Image (cartoon, rainbow, N blue to C red):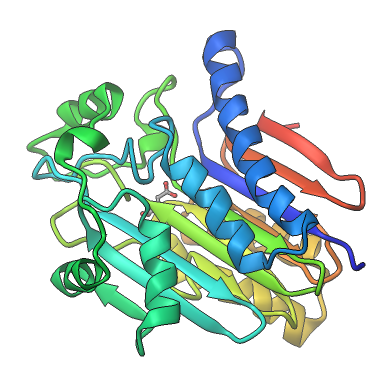
Length: 310
Ligand code: ASP
C-alpha cells in the first residue's frame, strides 16, 4: 500500500498564544482531531481522497467554532452566504458553489455539482435550484447563528469595511475550513468551505470556491486548500501557482508552499496560509499570520494538531 496523508485547516489569522482560554483551545483541538480522524479512517480503509476530504470538511462545517456551514459569518445584510469547492486530482474534475444559504454542508453540494451536473461552478439561485432538485433539506437562519459572529458583525455593521473573521479581535473565532488528502492509490483531492468575510458586500465571492485561487488538486503536483483574505488569493491565483511552481520549476511541495505564502502573497499585501499534500504523502502547512488552526496525519508518522506558530 502506498503512503496516505491528510491535512486539514480551520482558518489562519490573529491567533495569539495566551489569549484564548485553555478550555477554548481544547474545544478547537477536539473538533480538529475529530475531523482529522473522520477523513483518515476512510483513507486507511481504502477510501478515496475525495471521500476523505469531504468527510473531514463536513465535520468542521458541523461545528459552530469555524466559519463554514454552522457558525458562518454575517454578510452586510445580516445573512449567511456560503461558498465551497472540491477537486479530484486524478481526473481534474471539480465542483464549486457560491452564495448559497440554508445548506448544512456546502461541501457536499459542491461534490454533487462535480459528480451530478455537467458544470463546474453554480452560484446563487442556480446553486439553490440545483440543491432543491437533489432534495437538499434547508436549515433555517437560526441553525447558522453564532453569538460571537453576530457581535463581530455589529462592530462593523453599516460601514464599508469587511473583515476576516480571524482578524477582528484578538480573541475572535476563526474560520474557513479545508482538507487535502493523498489516498492509498496516490490520488489527491482538495476541499474548501467558508462563510467568507464578516460584513462582506451582498454577492461578494471569495477565493474558496474558485478553482485555482483557494482550492486545487492535480495528481501530478499537489492538492491545496487556502485560507486568508480571499481577494489576494484570487489575484495571486495562489492554489494553482503552487502547482505551477512544482510542475514547471520542479520545486518541492514545501519550497513551493513557502515561496507562495512567505513571499508572493506578502508582496501582494495578503495574509493567510495554506495546507497542501503531494502524491508522495508529503505535507506542507505554511502561514504568514500569527496562527492557523491545522492538523495532519500520515502513514509516514506525521501527527500534529496545532494553532500557533511552532
Ligand atoms: N478565504 C476566505 C474568503 O476570503 C476567508 C477565510 O479564509 O477565512 O472568503
